[in-house]
Length: 438
Image 1 (cartoon, rainbow, N blue to C red):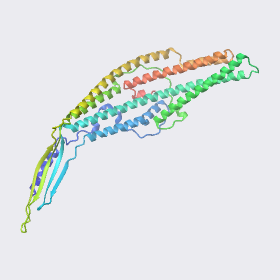
Image 2 (cartoon, rainbow, N blue to C red):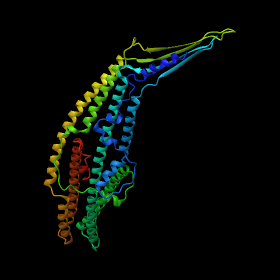
Image 3 (cartoon, rainbow, N blue to C red):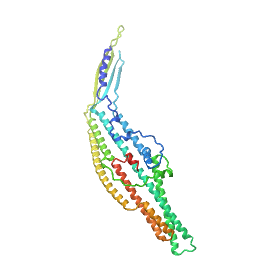
Image 4 (tube, rainbow, N blue to C red):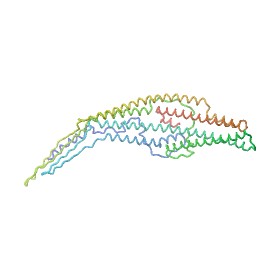
């Protein structure tokens, strides 16, 4: 009576070692090296010690909300690898027939996914995790780029506000001198009104600069996750470049290219999986039945045990997943087209950035810097104090000086934007020696 039950041992052992039982290598070992940064645990959002512009960049990399969102998305995609590689649970069914003597059946089925579909699902999940890791790195690059430009613009705003403050002082001095005259000629009255309008224009420009600084401060506070004081804003201002480096590397290392290539890889993995969806699930396992014959008054009846093995699978008779294959193939073609377009676009963008950078640097180097212009301006103010400059010339000089300063800062900021975009396209923007010297 117990022999059939003991015979189930080899059957269960056979099922246990069926192909697909081993879970394979850990998911972390199967992700490409592209996401090495992503595997560093992101620390909890915390306050930053902001002593200089380098501290500000590091604080943004640690606390920026977009980075933290991308990191959580990557963690979710990485966890999906384990989900995709899970082995289906076996099924167990039982049937009881009370009847005269009583009988029953017990069936155990181990599910085998034919066509290597479990591994292919893992390939799709790993491909998506790699893409998520690349998007995380791309977000980190963008955060560095925007933070650096904000820090440089803060320095420029500080210089422009200093110029406006000195201009207002000069206009106030002229207004005070003309206002004290007991009687003013028509020219003097026009000069007085002109100085007042010039001073009011300075005040309006100061308001615009204050609003711009507040916007920059708000963006930085959102990125840092902490409120910023005026003293902290002054400390993290990025100094003007002392030299303009040559553009680095080549565009072949652009993360955008790797993201596009990963899209192709993911679509290809999905297409292979759709091709195998036609394979059925094969279910195999032991059967165990029990039956007891009806007894009589003198005989309680004999029990009979039987053991065997059964299997079942779906027959792909009516459809073989042609629609799924066609959809996945079209998606793969789309990803390949996008990858080719992305490569041409990045190549053209990098070439255009190189030309623009050279033009911007030549323009900056041919013209005097704000420091040189400030020394010249001090001489002009000396002429004013000695009464050697007419009011019209003084107002025109300050207007022209202000326009020059804004134009110089605009060209300088665009040159910095071009340089750091090239750092991003060449994959160097996250290098420690680059981001710590903004």
